[in-house]
Length: 207
Image (tube, rainbow, N blue to C red; front, top):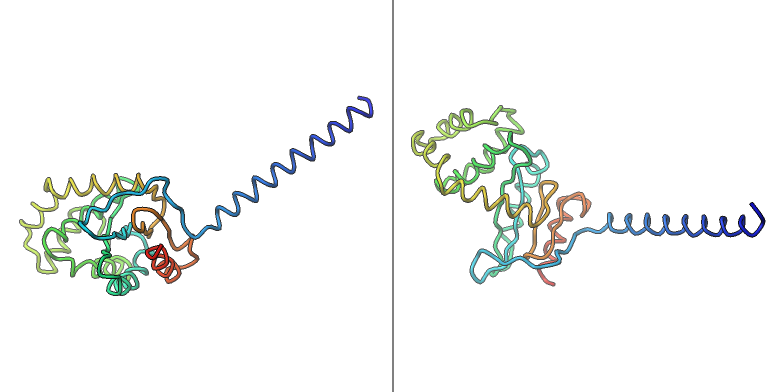
């Protein structure tokens, strides 16, 4: 290899390293972004309201920590803004808990929403399948037949399918996550904390 070839090779190596460094820096900057913006805004399902979607799972300890903070935050949202909770399942073992939220909603028993988080994460009750969830609901005063019929109903199945579609559209990979105004997605990891996520959501609502 002559001197000219050596110089060309060295220059090529420098350029390659420079390109790799630039790409790495760009990826690091993206990773530090507190939210991501969707290429195409999604419509609201609530007429004349701006939606904030909270993607959560009952089995998620971070969601259990976030629940009282999110509930309090929701009471201070502007009048034209509404919080919609979206239970999601990352695998088949989480589906019954996903189904549980929509069952409680249909039965007008969302007063048990926070209680279920407490039962799972503070009381350490193994409430992960339909049988255990049914018995827990009955213990809370819910009629067993009404619960079972609702748990397996077409309406609940429809809402689960919708939740799964939303999780795909918003590319939800972690819980809890917030989708703000159909345009932005953030979570505690991106925002560096649950309070910071809620503060960021306030700012995004104003954009």
